[in-house]
Length: 215
Image (cartoon, rainbow, N blue to C red; front, side, top):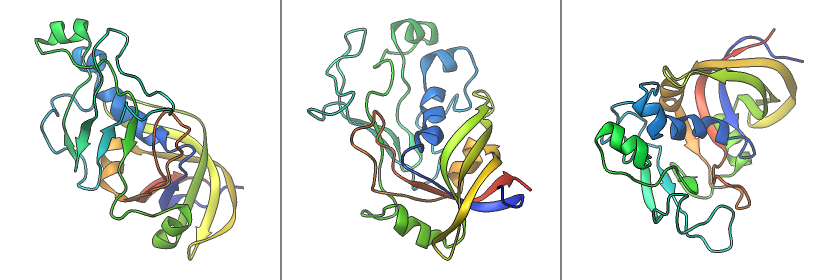
């Protein structure tokens, strides 16, 4: 059953944490920027996200999912910073969108994005639950949407209510709402437990004061 409506600490399991990161990457894509439908428009070189957020692109890890030397246009990939301590370091512009925007082309999209651990290495889900003490652990998203222009989102979620760092009971039929810029400003920590078999290396993430609708 659902928990009571209100603001909770939200821990997002590594299995589904890409749901929190993919909208950031889409907002840095040339098509969204060129069509003025990105909530990160004009952010290049600016610190618009929290100090604790660093996203790297690691396309050359041998033998792992999505590693590649070139994108579909033949542009060479390389290890790079996408976001560094909250500062946007690059847009993703193919030849078409770069020409439209009067900028130099880059790779067309992030190849193997990884969220760096913060504030310390070695944190897994259990350690993060203890750090947050009370809240809701999200283990699945079921429906909902987000607005790429404003950054607003509304997702159906299910998972577990936890207290004192321990899972108490399962919850379902709840809705989490907010804005991605505000959500990321409330980042508590990013874990060090991303699954190497997945295309995006996104660890368990934790945020404070997230709005949930339930009972």
